[in-house]
Structure formats: C-alpha cells, structure tokens
Amino acid sequence: MGDSHDEEAFDGRDRAFMRGRWTGALALAGVLVAVLAGCAHTGAADVRPDADTAPELVPLATVAPGVRQDMRYHGRRNFMGRPVAGYEAARCWLTPAAAQALAAVQRDVEPLGLTLKVFDCYRPQRAVDDFVRWGKDLHDQHTKAEYYPRVPKQELFRRGYIAERSGHSRASTVDLTLVVLDGLRARQVLTGPLADGREVDMGTPFDLFDERSHTADASLAPDVQRNRRWLRALMQRHGWRNLPEEWWHYTLEPEPYPQRYFDVPVR
Ligand SMILES: [Zn+2]
Image 1 (cartoon, rainbow, N blue to C red):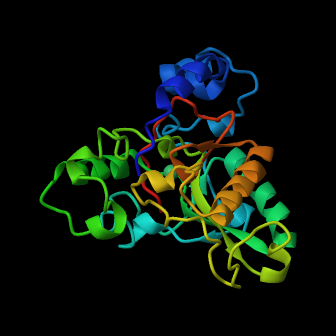
Image 2 (cartoon, protein in one colour; image 1 turned 180 degrees about the vertical axis):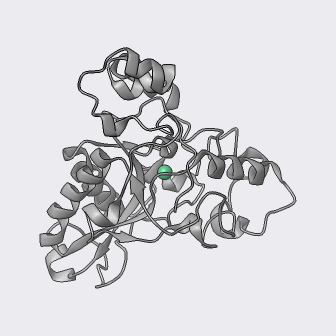
C-alpha cells in the first residue's frame, strides 16, 4: 500500500546519517570505490559483487519465530486481488536491525497473551511498480468494495494510497497487528472482544484505503482507539515509528538503509 506521506521529510533528515555509513558509500559509489576508500570496519565477507543491489536481509522466522506471518501480497487476499510481482515466497525478510527490534516487541507481548502478526515486510521495487500499474488501470475495480469503498480509484495516487516508492523497499518497515493468544491475559492491556486466536480489533482491516485507517481517527470506537494507541506506544519503545495514515505501518528509526530501494525478489 502507498505510504508516501512522510517520505520526503524523513529521507531528508536521514541524509547526513547515511553519509557516514559504508552501506551509504556503496549506494553512492559502488563496491569498488568503497573498497578503495578503505572502510576499515567493513569485513571482506560484506563486499560482494551484488552488494549494491542486494541488502543484507534476514528471514524474520529465524530471529523471531513466534511472530505470525500472513504475507498478503504473496497471495490473493490483498487490494489487487492477485499475487503481487516480486513475492515469490510467503516470507518476511527484514534488515537484521529491524528483525531484532521486532523480536524485542514480540518478547514484550507474549507474556501478555498476545503475538505480533506481520502482513508485509521488505517489499521489492518491482512490487511497488506492480501497485502503480494496477492503480492506473481504472477498468479493474473488482476489489473496490473490500479495499477502497469510499475512494474513487482515480484518486488513489493523489490521496497518497498508491505511490511510486515505498519505505518497505528499504527493508526496515513492517505492516502488522496483534493476535490474541490468551484473552484473559490480554485483557490486562487491551480492550474489546479479545477472542483467543483472533486479531485484536483495530477498527479496520489491513490495507483499507480509508480515513478510518488513520491511526488517530477519532470516529472509531473507544476500544479500538485505545488498542491502536497501545500498539503504537509499545512499538515506539522499541524504535518503531508509526505512519499516521496507517495504523499497521511502522518504520525502524534510524533505518539501516535510509536511501536505498531494493529490488531483490522475496524468496
Ligand atoms: Zn506498510
């Protein structure tokens, strides 16, 4: 889903941060120049021929096996109603820093009878390009009732729901929610139905293109508003910044690759 709202400001602020990192040097100058520049802290194993196109990513399952994965863009349960280009496997890949930061959140929620569930993680640029192609095809509206009932499809770009770039391609952004493992324990911190095995009520489904998906939308039931705030506060404690337009979308701060948009397929 589009998440362009904050890209400019965020990228600008992180520019200085990037300049000091060898990953940034690689992005700007390529492998050879980085080696010649003598980045002393760069191990030889890091300098690979494909290093300027392939980020160092890890499967979340190896770092936080308890986090549930419901990788929507691999299948048909998404706003395009079909598998998205570049998702060759239903796997969550992230930078090691992002995976560790998510594992830390998971360690917090499990004793509370909850688990994280991710819907999307690293997203190849070719998937974002696929979103854009879909967004421009005004004839295809078969998912409208479920995903954008109150927004005309021709408005999806202008309103920021679809964009040419996504923070997800930088590999330190996740879309997620909470699932109830034990409602009795979960009730200590959350409100609402909290049925075991069900997602916590966040007011809208993931990827609904609508103002009700704005994290602080005041038209929602008080229980829902509290649940969203609780998730946001929890994520913030572990370095995750929420996108105000999407209650499910979080980016790690600082990002390991603040200026990079990767295109390696998810496998
Ligand atoms: Zn997202």
